[in-house]
Image (cartoon, rainbow, N blue to C red; front, side, top):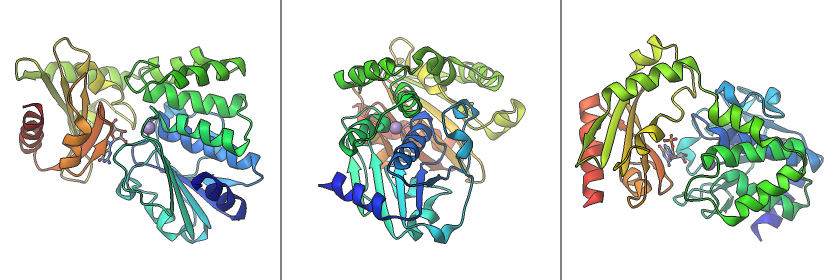
Amino acid sequence: MTLDTILEEIKNAEKIVILTHESPDGDAVSSSLSVMHAVAQLGKKADVIIPDYSKDFKFLPGADKILKESDIQKYDLAIAVDCSDLKRLVGAKEYFINAKKTVEIDHHSVNSMYADLNYVDPASPACCQVLIGMFEYFGIDINKELGTCILAGILTDTGGFQYSGVTPETFEFAAELLRKGVNISEICQKVLRNKTKANCELTKLLYDRMEFLENGKIAISYITLEDNKKTNAQIGDDEGLVEIERDIEGVEVAVLLKEKEGANGFKVSLRSKENVNVSDICFLLGGGGHSRAAGCFISGTLEQAKSRILEVIKQEME
Ligand code: 5GP
Ligand code: MN
């Protein structure tokens, strides 16, 4: 079974590296740290390499050990978490490609199975939830430190247990973590409720520019590089913006176009409420994600990116 082989590879490896997707969210950072803690219990030290991530996650146990870079040639085993495609390992891909063995652990339904060993469970609302099952199988003690990382990942990817992917097990795991002393209200405050000033400034711009199309079923807005500069926005400061659009009455699909540095185009975030599969839409444009939350990149000007994404959304909504 894949899990037995993964455990064997961890035990056999001397040097292990843990990697995740670009613009890492709470689930990505938390999954990386969770694997680091688990591997430590198996008697191995692993490097976590994340070139840049939001300061919201710096409180997570072990975050002080995260490296921005390391020696590309040195790893026996690379473990990628919460990442559906090799393309998305931006800034970390070289470590993965150069490792002697590769493993990925993920929860995206569209996954290119790019590692030697792929452990993917699309029924889990967060990669951290996939990890719980795996750690139990490995006999890892999910203590307060590890539990804090795991719960932070689950909370961010489920919007605080609110999104449709939540399963009965999510609550059972959360209950178990609370029994172990994990402080849920502190984690919620840090990863869900805390807003930076830049995020507030970007929110104002989001509302100002919001347009409603197709009888109010589509809400669309955008953020430019100039906006990021003016508001002094850092990585993670656009967190939660596209969800504001989705929460509006009558909106089925929320669209946020974010101009991407040095790429001559826009990163598009899509969210849907009930019926539209936004992962399918993004897949058609070379991206992916989940049925209710997905993303892709579209090159060109704002007008070009906007008209392309609207064209595909409208087709999918027919
Ligand atoms: P976000 O809009 O928050 O960047 O991403 C929403 C979801 O879609 C996340 O699960 C994220 O991993 C996935 N996603 C975002 N952009 C891409 C992309 O370009 N390719 C793929 N495969 N998935 C993406
Ligand atoms: Mn995730």
